[in-house]
Image 1 (cartoon, rainbow, N blue to C red):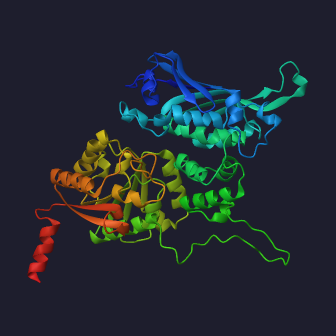
Image 2 (cartoon, rainbow, N blue to C red; image 1 turned 30 degrees about the horizontal axis):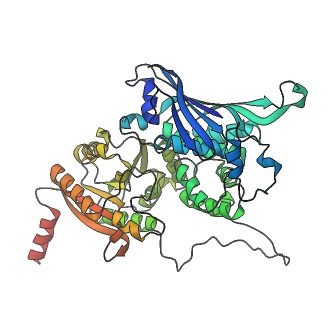
Image 3 (cartoon, one colour; image 1 turned 180 degrees about the vertical axis):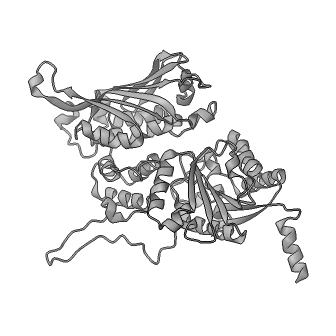
Length: 496
């Protein structure tokens, strides 16, 4: 099976089309080979110049290894083990190859071209054969809402016998201007969805994989329920959990996504599955984190607030419910996240929603329009920034915008040992570039505070361990006005 990704350099762009090689971490000048569990993947470049560059991923499936890796539900002598389309049509096998061969690009990491990794590029993706059992219109329904122009051409069942009609395969062409990481995440999730089956056994970890890979676009997708059902191979128990979690991410009612299983017993009584939160269950870390941020904003007396890296707007929804915050600006680099945030705001009363402005922007670039605000929030943001770009973020936020206060939350890596299933050296999220200990966070915060004229204090957030500290750590920076916050506290105590 074959996948090609082409990038065309826009007129006047400062980068060359061959920089696609940097983003994919694959040199255009040579062929590279990668062993896969069911075959061999090769990456090569049919064309590579400054104006246009095409990268090809060719996956050759070994039928014998495929049979040995049959799924748990396949019978020992099933004919389907030997007669199938797996070696030829893009499916979950190709999706797995994308994640292993283009893993860094899929996660948006590129140390040599970090700005380009966050830039929307003119892309063209071609797949000669894709199983699409719902027909070409389903390819349009899942890819078009993500910004793609879709051409799905049905392939004949047999060109020699046109009267037999079309097969359930299509030649798929996608064109659009998107980040490469977003394009790869769309393929990773949606190729198995169009196929409707997977080559491996599904368990609960597949839910986390789906939500992780689709976090920036799936909650706001109009076909999210259908995508979820197909991705999880209609495993009812997994689908219900995934849809409930999607509803939580999008502030929707679980019923809207079909996450509630309504049935009627013999007596005609509803046996709707319970979806309300357990009142005895403690609030999630995300809820505790937002509460801590809101409390800190009130403590510093902020009324004009920046939510930098606002994502789909979870914090924005809580800020607007407090009348003390009379101007709120959400900034994020992801257009899809901002669209979700906008949808959330539409559900609010006008008097609340009108206090919020959404802007697209990268936090590593200065923006004069962000100057003069009382406070800025960087909630779970800095760990998503490459270490060599942190200096640019510091200058943009603390140096250029220079709000009266800055609140920064980030995971405490020491606490990770208490999370079941986390192995040493792993991060809580696939997109994290680092996770700091309390000492590392304090060193960074004190250095930034000294350089840009802030005082800083630290607050634990979430569950706390006597030895390892809290799950989340928060730094509250307050700008010097000739006297530090600590000095003010001392003077007040002395006066008392």
